[in-house]
Length: 307
Picture (cartoon, rainbow, N blue to C red):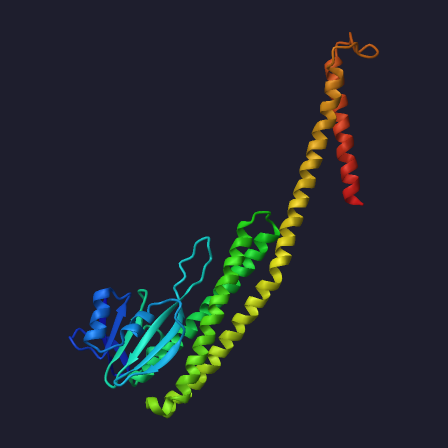
């Protein structure tokens, strides 16, 4: 689906004309890719790469435009799997047009960073900066989820929460790769700022973007190291919780077996000792022995727990 926009009074607004200044396509179909290749003279391989989630960030100079492919996180929809995925996006910057290719439906140009846009190149840089901010937001969400899972693992013997931690750890590996390749792309943009015709303000913005991306990378590395170092400890906690549960079940089993043994002994087809054979309260006396034996076992167990 194609949507048109234009820069008007420093803001990005919709443009319904046939030749918009900014052209955005979400999840392009084969027909839309064909339009991008034939009408706008984009490289077919680059267009296909822009929607390939495994594509690395890169910068390419074409005769009439500059192609920028960068990594961004996909919108997280929640669920039990806790998988955070990355995707690719592309910016094709012409002298008087900017084409943006995304592989999912997004709400664009609504953040405060788009309140003042002076040029197409500045808009392209802010699109790249938005992906860094998106990564940082996902890292905050991962920290909150990790803290919640740690509490659940401490009180659970199920494997579900450990599997969710494994999913988070795998997601962080993909995030590390994506943020690292974005950092390489930002460095290439800085080195080619003169060739791209970037203004002094835009070049300084690239410097700020590089710092922000490095901080995001560092935060992701720390989170990945924490998860990797705690996985063994979490597995040990689950194993310990299982041992405690098995000890409790064994105690319950023993507690039930002792009175059962007493009742079974007096229920055999033999003469009962003393006057129990003819005593009118023989049944209640035997039940009393059973409860006394159960109480003795429970008293012994609580005595061990107190020690």
